Image (cartoon, rainbow, N blue to C red):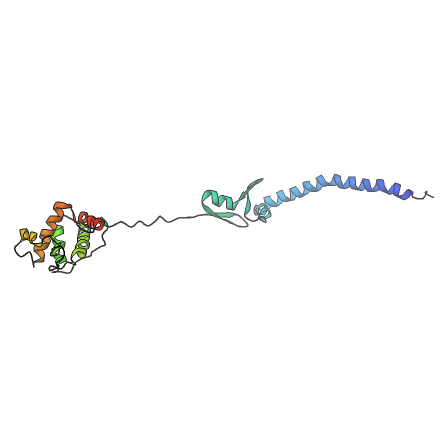
Length: 214
């Protein structure tokens, strides 16, 4: 018969031996788990990715190397989409800005004038001088502002007259005796004045925009 209280003395070594055996088994269990992982990766290459895909936006690029898709997107300017088997990288294409060519002199397009009108006469004269559509656009804007292309337009305060608002109106007599009523005569004089003082209608239009007159 064992003395009282002796069971605890004999059972404690047995517990320690059991714990020691458990610690000795840990390396074996870790090795077995690693081999399972390797075999699974060989049989199904996507398995390695599937294991790490549990972490949001994290994939395995190489053994032991993790790559955050959001960081890739920020660094490369691309959008990365994770998938179980792999991930795709879609290039983000930014369309180039639309550049609108400015009109010569900044005048709006005048279009094609009505046949027989004062503007149609001016259109032919502008082309005869070798000026392009942009110069005609500037001329239309200039004389829209000055007289509205009215052959009888008269400024009572200054005495300016006609389509080009010659000051005084009698200056246009150098282009023809019918200067007071003939739009062709007034336009001829007006284009000569613009050419001699500003070079082109767009030059005159730019001055009118800056100063209010030309």
